[in-house]
Amino acid sequence: MTMASSSIIIPPFLSASITRRNLLLSTTIATVSPSPQVPPPDVTITDRVFLDFSLCPTYFRSDPSATLSSTTPCSSDSTPLGRVVLGLYGRHVPLTVSTFKLMCTSSSASYKNTPIHKIFPGQFFLAGRQGLRRDTAEVGPLLKNLPPNTDVVNSKSFLIPHARPGLVSLCLSENDDDDETRLDPEYRNVEFLITTGPGPCPQLDGGNIVFGTVLEGLDVVTSIAAVPTFKPSEKIRQFNDFAEFLGDERAQNARSLWNRPLKTVFISDCGELKVTKPSLSPSLP
Image (tube, rainbow, N blue to C red; front, side, top):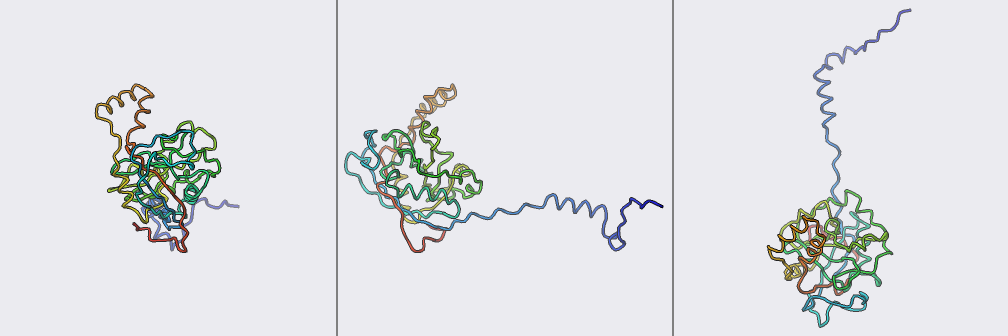
């Protein structure tokens, strides 16, 4: 009995079309073929909330033992700046949006009566910082009733760029919550920023999560951005850089005062706007 030949027999109708060049070409095409494109983020507006802002004539200094809901951050009458209405992208980052809504509506721990603690002119402002001191613009107490936000570990959450004024973003790379607060096992990040323009903020991309946009009140955002802030002299900046280079921890403490508003802008009221059809054009404002 003879053994079958081990050579591969190519049918005659294929032998003319299969050449070494064709095989190499097909292998190359298979190697460099692009992966499936990631679908664009869904920026359908699912919810609307409002933030009312007011201005104190001086910087806020208050009793650290006071509760957030029992007092306003002004020792004298405040001046209303206006209302900002936000449209939230609940389909894109549902947990981030639900947490933000809860912080706007909760009676125990919320953004109400908490100041904006940093303003970066021509870029954005920060609000919702957590900590143990009322006089440094903090949210409290610790937000133990909030679920963990798994949006922060999903790469798709970071796809929307900070490309224009009026975008609302969860602070991650820009977060400056009190260190002791962040060490708590039940810590939940609720600090947020709003871009003020006039241009984009590409330095925020990839490190913070855009979850909404300003629908009404962009003029209020612009007026907040115009509030004067603490700006150290060039000599102090150089000294601070040198101290940081030497590992002096006081350098970071001193830097935390930079860009603080010289007058207190605070969220005097906040809540959810119930509407029949919250979805609006994502091109707004």
